[in-house]
Length: 271
Image (tube, rainbow, N blue to C red; front, side, top):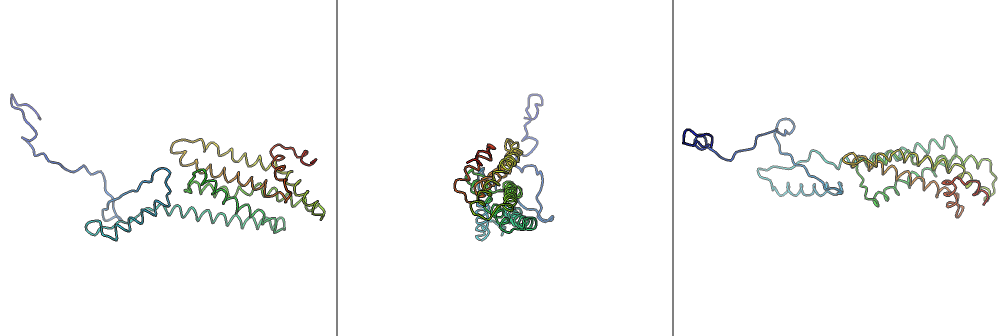
């Protein structure tokens, strides 16, 4: 009822025709700036694999277009593909890894004049990312743009401890004898000598990224994978530095780890 004229009520049907209409238009989507189009977005559930989901969506879209399921000959065409970001990230990580290996080899060969030392550091650059991917899979960290970007950042940091150890070993070997036992002991002691600073240096870098891991909400979802990936990669590189650069001295790696963490280089030397 609109109003009451005396004792006679006036309804809407008395002054107008009521029917179901259309919603008020709020905007429009244009294709190439001249033709209107309809936009649809595929939302991925939390914890989903973007690469697998995008591949399945593409297969379904191809099936719909091939069978002509849409009226009027309409076709579905994608204008934003998240797969391109993933592929670009993978390409970036591979490029950074190759560039890092090339630069480390060139720098070490130029400044140390020894190819074997360069190969040791190169082995760290190859093995550490592989183990990092295994750890990411174990902790449920997907290979998204942020995590792969964190790995690309960490590639330059992963060789820090290894380079320090290799350079010190190379320097000490220059003053050691040719006896195999003497050389083995020299390698072990040279690693112990810089083990504690190398461990502390890695831990300090990891601590810098701890605030990013503590973020919550949308910020945490974006930056936590980056910080976790960097921390995992650095810790993996530290393990490789301590346990692989031991000079083949049996249980020397265990003693080296204890000496590096506790600073008991004197006790290890006495053993």
